Amino acid sequence: QLQASGGGLVQAGGSLRLSCVASGSIFSIGGMGWYRQAPGKQRELVAYIANDGTTNYADSVKGRFTISSVNAKKTVNLQMNSLKPEDTAVYYCNAQINLLSSWGQGTQVTVSS
Image (tube, rainbow, N blue to C red; front, side):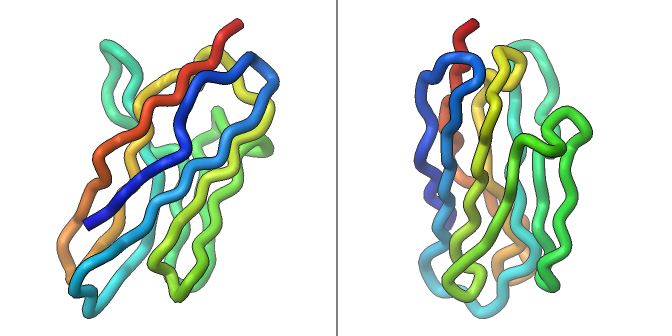
């Protein structure tokens, strides 16, 4: 399973760091990513990191967010800088664990103007 943490309330221009830890009986873990879903909108990919370290970002967060993985890829972090009100959403981590797509419980990020 995936456990996400680190959300909260921050003013525009501020920073937050999200973390997601995979636990349980893990035989294989693939790429890991962060998605977000704002009220009334579809869930969208924010950032993704592949097994080889290759990263991919949504255009809206490029240059502001950084994804990284540590601890033999059982942890994925999302450093979010220069936050904007439009970044407000519930953020979910996702990973391919034992060949199945797994989701964390979501963590709320609210950016005030």
